[in-house]
Image (cartoon, rainbow, N blue to C red):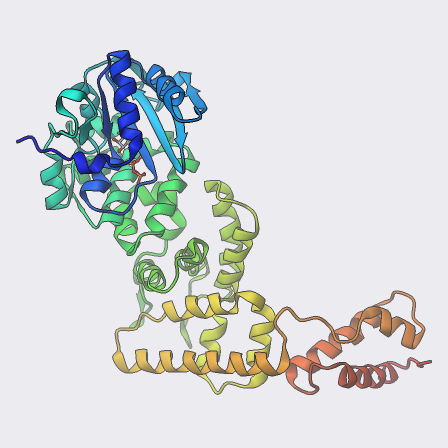
Length: 473
Ligand code: CTP
């Protein structure tokens, strides 16, 4: 049954494209994500994909010329595509093609084709839906693979035999899992099997593209959907073996530890409810990464993971480097979160002193709230009593942080007495004594022995100098 969706084409750009296509006597269709998201009512789409039965590049040029004020065209000759920017939207033009891929790369061998040929070579039935921009059937939905029905049944299915679609472009395995996570859809069983069968082909995909998909999975409402699919299909072992190494429960002498892989996925889902900060979500994913290599059994205390935070922070760098994630302040933030991930938990389990909270704020600086969000997400106990107790303890920690902050201002700590002042007071040249005094002042403030104020710090400095046998002016 053919249905008309003229209301999808409200944006005046479609009329401009339609007229340009007529002038060139080529047929044109809007296809892919725009149509899918319109049918799912997923808000205003960012990008528009246009397929022309002829040259996409020529059509793009014509459209750009006809746009009020005319516009630039970016041509990607190797791919036979062109892009025109219209307000905030990127419009991609491509000629319909019959396409096959070289087995060892994603570079397609291109041959002109019909709309049907083009739809067949797309990744999923829900992404192969097209709406006509042609005068005779403007607004008609063209759906040869029952994409509409898959949309309503919430199924990710390939137009062709799944082995062919995935083997043609292995990135699609990641895309299937990403769409399942973003849209909360099910991957068709035969498709899921084909992903497992073709998993090693992920090796030909660049890390940048893999990370794009990982970031989209992590940004979804329930990232565990994606990570558990990546795991069950075997893809995760290629992408992040460090995470897979966390799976499993060992028992010795009746003592076991939790499964840190599945625990991690719960933590990521928990944090997704409280933050959209992608890097904080990465921190949640990697917060226990050091636990596999540090796991030991001790007859007296049972299972231990000593120093896992420290090793974990080092592993963050290696993993970011390997996956070509940014090695900038974002990576440093993730490292810091992993390194400090156990600090508030320790605080919440015992009587909380002001000085311990001051040290936490001092070390975490501006990231103390993020750290608290991570630690709260880390509570995955199924015991309601304990759950309540931990949450309550964290509330107390948060309150204390506020109190201590208001009073002591140790976040982004600036020493109340400068190094220069210490030097001039004791008539010192640059020397280790200056560091000793500065450090002693900082410690005294963090311990709560003196307030974070100039007068008190100055007096303390004089006393400390005396102890060191220094004479003041
Ligand atoms: N496509 C494909 N195989 C790929 C990538 C893309 O068949 N590996 C096709 C799909 O028809 C897809 C369209 O190209 O709908 C546009 O791709 P892209 O812009 O990457 O994705 P969208 O589907 O638009 O979704 P999103 O913007 O959420 O990534």
